[in-house]
Length: 219
Ligand SMILES: Cc1cc2nc3c(=O)[nH]c(=O)nc-3n(C[C@H](O)[C@H](O)[C@H](O)COP(=O)(O)O)c2cc1C
Image (cartoon, rainbow, N blue to C red; front, side):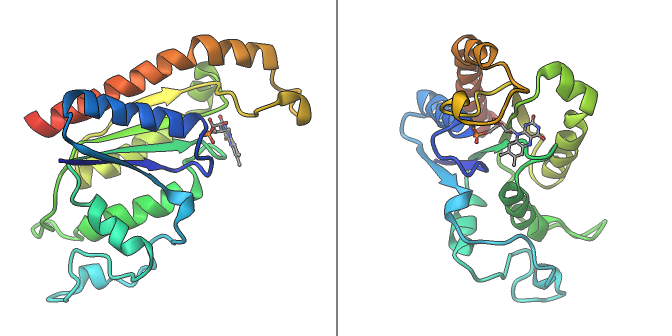
C-alpha cells in the first residue's frame, strides 16, 4: 500500500512538515509494510489547472486525466493511485498556500465531471487535511477560517471522500524571534505553546495518520 503526505509549506523542516512526518509515522504504526512518502510541493516547478478542458472532452484521449505535461505530471499520476493522502498547509492570508491551491486544482479537476449522469472512474482514497497557523483558535473562529477550509474539504469530499482534519494554532514561526520585527507576538508565550501544545499536536497528527491507515483498510 502507498500513502503520500503533501507538504504545502515552502519550509521543509518546520511546523507543517513535522506534523506531516508524524502522520506518516502513524500510518506506518498500523501498516508496517506500507510505503509512505512526503512530497514537498515547493520543490516541484508546477502550476495549477490551465483550463484546457482536455480532461472533459467527449471521447477525448485524456478524458478524466490531466494532460498538462510537466514535471508534476508523473508525480500526480502516482498520487491519484494512493491508498491514502494527508495534505498539510500553512495558512497564508487566510487561505492555504498558493502551491497547495495549485495542487488541489490539478488533483481534483480531472475527476470532477460536469455531469449529473457521467462519472469519472478513479480511486476514492481516505484524505486528511492539516492546517497550521499563527492565529489562536479564538481568532481563527472570529475570522472564519473554518469556512474556507470547509469549502476545500467539501470539494475533496465530492471527488474523493470526506476528509479528516487537524487545525494547529499559534505555531512557532521563527528560529530566533529577536532577529525579526514581530512585536505583535509574545515570543515567550509562543515558546511555551511550542513546548507544551505542539507535542500534543504531533500526537494528534500521529493519530490522524492511524485513522487514515485504518480507513484505507476498512472503508
Ligand atoms: C506569507 C505568509 C502569510 C501568512 N498568513 C497567515 C494568516 O493569514 N493567518 C495566520 O494565522 N497565519 C499566517 N501566517 C503564518 C503561518 O501560517 C504559520 O506560521 C505556519 O504555521 C507556518 O507553517 P510552516 O512552519 O510549516 O512554514 C502566514 C505566514 C506567511 C509566511
